Length: 319
Ligand code: ARG
Image (cartoon, rainbow, N blue to C red; front, side):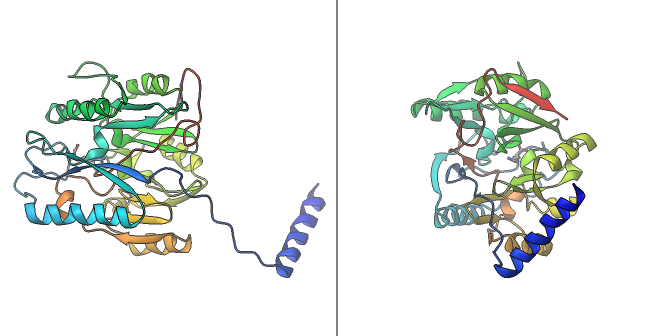
């Protein structure tokens, strides 16, 4: 057996020497080409629900608008579609459109929005705007909890990766939301326990890049969940806690373009080596609310049967 393996190794080295082939890049993410964003007409820091927020440090309205328009333009340049919803005057955090809910297209083509049930009452009124947006477009709305009744669920904790819906829980989404979520969508939900107060949503610690690669910050999770996530991603770009706290994982990937608010040199070197183009987008004003590129955008093109493997009845796996 061992000799056979060695023969194989020798012959493939020999073949490679004769005909060197460039390594084949893993397939691009099929989703991430259409987004919902909320125009920042009333963005303020009025309360504190994460460690970045300080009402004494208010965003400047003009810079806020410039940054947001810069992001939308960069997304469109990268080839993405961006749909825009107006911000409610009573909802200063609504600009973080990722948390409005989880839009998913079922295998039969019908569209669903799993409404968020925000942990903090300060954000709960946003859900009715998200629901109205969805219903007006013929989307079914699935509600797993509302007004403090039922499990909390915030869509910034969710990503399609490897055919599963990877879901962070702890600071915002509750573990009890995972099974009804899996059942509602007919998919496998992989629950990861977030323990880092500064990475209170999964999208601050995890960013799928293509079908094999993702940025992963193990320091965000308990040991078992960090290991489970590293096992799930064939080629992880492992971030230190300090790197992740630059918001570099809170990025959006459109094909081979990565729109990033910050990119530590080591991270940039690896992304470029893997064939990604890094596009930096100024986001300082939005960091005052504790969110960045990914929080401001919500992908509308995640499809069951393509990005999520159908699992009749749904299923949850937790590390
Ligand atoms: N201030 C908002 C909150 O704490 C920021 C949301 C960030 N969004 C995200 N997808 N991580 O809810």
